Length: 374
Image 1 (cartoon, rainbow, N blue to C red):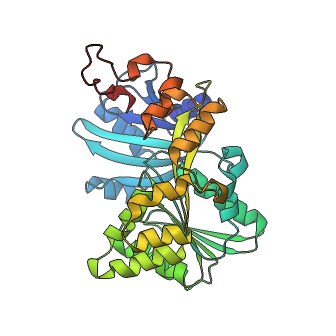
Image 2: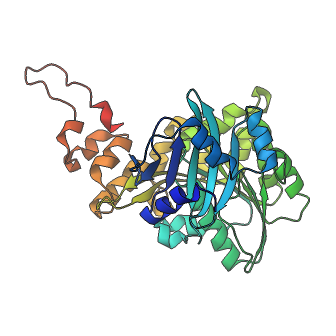
């Protein structure tokens, strides 16, 4: 058993989302969003080099020796499955291990909006799940793939970096391909997938213009495409896609979005009311004729008003979703306040008054809100 497995086993037993190992600090666990050190000495250079070296393949070791970061999956002898990133920093090497549950959670267990389940009924078009790093995008997509796998007879091709949740074919066939192991790039993976009789193509990350273009082509030619972007709202997602492609393709891109984009789901993870976990809260944009017209006429800044009025269509702004979750006592209002756009609507729920803007009783403008809430 690799020595590093002891730390991973401890992390799994504690229910953490990530295990961090870096030279000069003790091992740390990400617990419900907070990074906490474990009772252990500061890791030394030779010590951590040895730990990491035990789990690398010869090829990975050669790549890391050349100065490249590494992304791969690792199955611990006792601690489960992890997505791993190994990197170098000023004082030596470091590694982050993201815990991957052995069972794919269901959409219902994740408590996601019912509209996300309905999106799985579509046969073609593009669905984007977006958010910052560590907001559960991969988990949401895995739950969607599992739902499709159980309820429909499809050929599902998943392109990942690296493979996280392992899907076993049920009613559908699920083919999982890993960047760097089975495909050189996401764009090449999509190009190859379209020759493999797919019904659904999952693209782990739309990270460049070529990948976005290939994913758009797949969606336009009769496939259901699921993908992710590191954007923090539906409007920013629309703008990112338009800006990513060459200027001469801008009108074509806007036309694609208006006709083939089905939905954008943007999520954050917010601490639960009992502080024992985190819950995914989602902003949902559904493509309608009104939204399509705003995109085509360069008025994407008006999309939030359409989302606010589109609750009966399954749409919701992040602020709306968080306020509903606060009312249901599902999330911590103090944590939600940090994510809110219209913070005034959340102030009456905040319990830590240090987070609120300071009022100057002399009549001058209030001081800005504490940055600790951001």
